[in-house]
Image 1: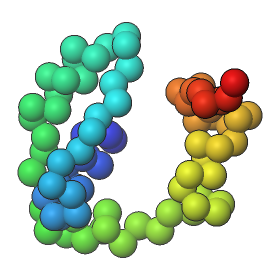
Image 2: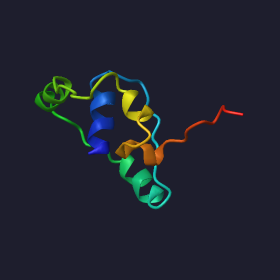
Image 3: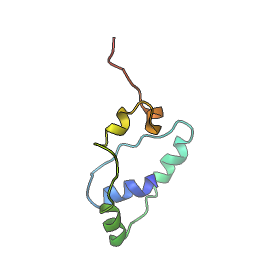
Image 4: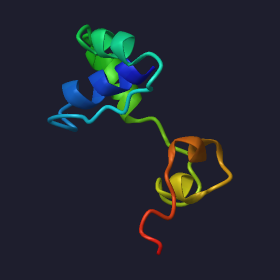
Length: 81
């Protein structure tokens, strides 16, 4: 799923580059798989591009929720004294 997302962003011209966050467990496998991004068809790109995101609030609200599923990869209070 992640590779499809990366391929769609790059092939649709929505990004010139992407920064990939890889898990420590299988980063080597993930790195190798990125070398073989699928070439998506125009219909695939159109369907992906029109998908509606149903996040509540802005996308960063998911990162701010310290009890949500996304919180396990976040680091909080880095600037606190």
